Image (cartoon, rainbow, N blue to C red; front, side, top):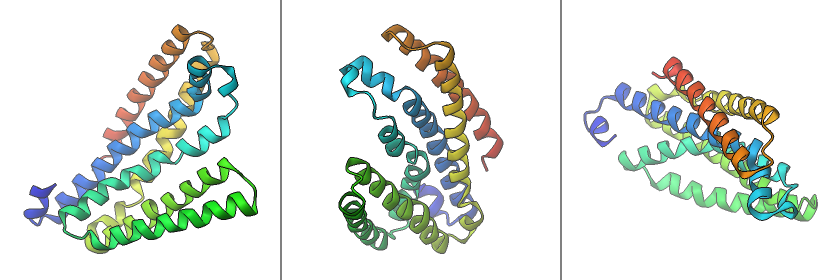
Amino acid sequence: MFKLFSKKSQNDFTEYTVNSMLLVALFLSVVSGGIIIFGNDFMRIWMGKKFTGYEILIIITTIYLPITLPSQVLNQSFTVMNKIKLPAMATILFGILALLFAYVFTRVFNFGIYGIAIATMLSQILRDNLFYPLYFSKLVQSFIKYQFLPILAAVIGVMASTIICFGVRYFIIPQTLLKFAIDVLIGGGSSLLFIYFVYWKIKL
């Protein structure tokens, strides 16, 4: 990344950044889809039945990660470009916003721990999928037409991996640790093959 930026090749720098974001988004989509489907089973096998029943919380805390975390590639790009002051300030501001959201959802709407999860999700989406891409587009004009491509890839990846893992779980119910491991291997492996195909279809 430093090498591409030092050469002042904006198109190559943009291409590298977008492809890196695509890889992160698609890989995390497999992890997210797997946790959504198998998370409750994992909690039951590992900690016992009393720790099950948190499907909604698991979904809230994992479903958005493939959409938001790829923007950390942009954060690294800001470092390479020596443009870290505004993103650093934004991180603080969105952290404060997360606290405000948490107060509203827990105190006003009484959502409890779900409110904290929703607050975190909203603040991260606003920072990672709104502020970071817009700021990077201002610095690198060629990024504008590609800024939503990693988000689209993440959505496709999460939907596909969730459907694949759901299908695997439907036919092999993970009642034991062995069956759980088989489910994860088949579901995760199949999802990885799918996103590999998607990546080579949409990469720049």
